[in-house]
Image 1 (cartoon, rainbow, N blue to C red):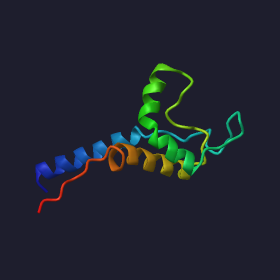
Image 2: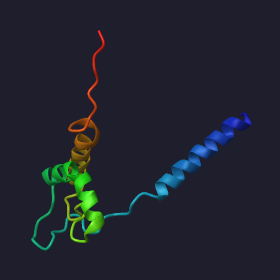
Image 3: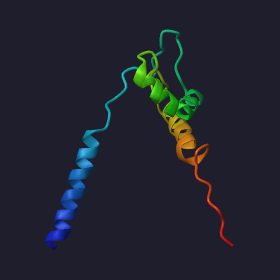
Image 4: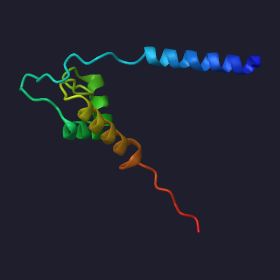
Length: 102
């Protein structure tokens, strides 16, 4: 094996290890109700994803608004949030339309 390939593999492994160490831990509030007794599901996740850019800006200036609902049902909320954010940010509302060349 040549030195460049070995260094490349070592760099990729180190990058993956560093990326994995930055992953968030478990959500202790998952599948627990909030003060009103509700747990956010897929549809709330979709809505929160759609409004995430606005919510993020508001959450910087106020302590009453959060970017992400921690009292959620887990994977379904996360899927809705990712789809909603994807629709707003790149796939839908603000997505770039391409022109077909003839």
